[in-house]
Image (cartoon, rainbow, N blue to C red):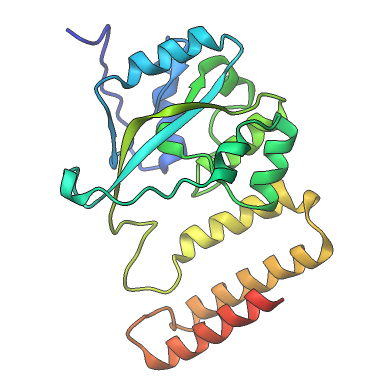
Amino acid sequence: SRFKKAELVTTSRNGGIAANVNNAIKYCKGTWIKNIAGDDILFNTCIDDYILFIKQNPHAQFITAKMKSYKNEFLSDNLLPSTYRNDELNFYTLNAKEQLHYIILNENIIPAPAVLINRELLYKIGLYDERYFIEDFPTWIKILKTGEKCFYLNKETIGYRVCESSTHPSKSFINFRFRKGLYLIKKDLCFEYYTKKQIIREYLAYGFCALFQNMGLNNRSNLFSKIVYNGYAWLIKHI
């Protein structure tokens, strides 16, 4: 009774996160889209907090908020220390162009689990890009390029579970699928903002990852792999 309508959307094949989310969005009729992944929970006042923020910031179309991170299970004893930094809060005072440059040239600090996006804005950018393994980073880039900045609700609305998964493997040095997806995003959407040195660095970093993977060295239990990987990490850091 808490939902106006709930519908099960199925597909005959697993096309990845972006394709699955896009398929679900096509059934949505509301003004706002809130993705809830398998490692996410919404706190009790989450929706109310977002609605109040939208009323106070009627021009906002792209919103994120604070979140709490937990180790493996959503238990108070498993709550991880907060990692928020002052520069993260300063990020949300920037305009869209400045935020775009920051996430491209520094790091993507917009937490995907806490993001709320206007449905019309998602359609404006063509929904989530299904070419990439990573769905959030290219979406933020495309939204910011439209001139819509990311607004910040300074309240914890979401819980996020940190555990071993397809993006956080424990037996490998490198999640090659993730690394390849990130490289393709940078190549397609970020290289135009990079210096020649930064582009060369990305080519070398990805080239090593591909070689490392293809040679069967991506294994933390192999001593030779550890030596090679540590040498690579040092080299990339000093390029």
